[in-house]
Image (spheres, rainbow, N blue to C red):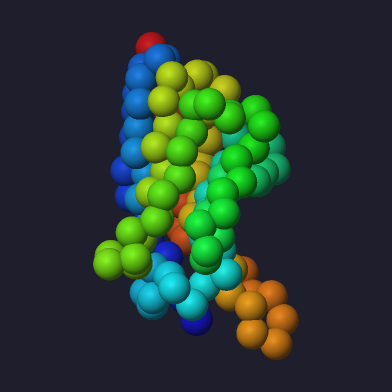
Length: 118
């Protein structure tokens, strides 16, 4: 069981930046991928960004150019840098970890709220 703890959410003005962090309870080197999903108010949870064990990165088309994701193996953490934030970025951001053993196992953090508002 992988436990994930997010931090860094909060209130930010449009055009501002925010950095979210997710710390895992075990080494991220054994995880197939770590990433973030966003759930806007009243909507479903959608893929946002991910980074694979060997460094490959995927970012949702809607936020490309404004978002970057990175790993810190020493801290078993993944960071999400979001720039030029817009009101539609408001939502709960969930950290996700994928472990592949005999099958795929997904683990989720409790979520952190990001509100973009003036």
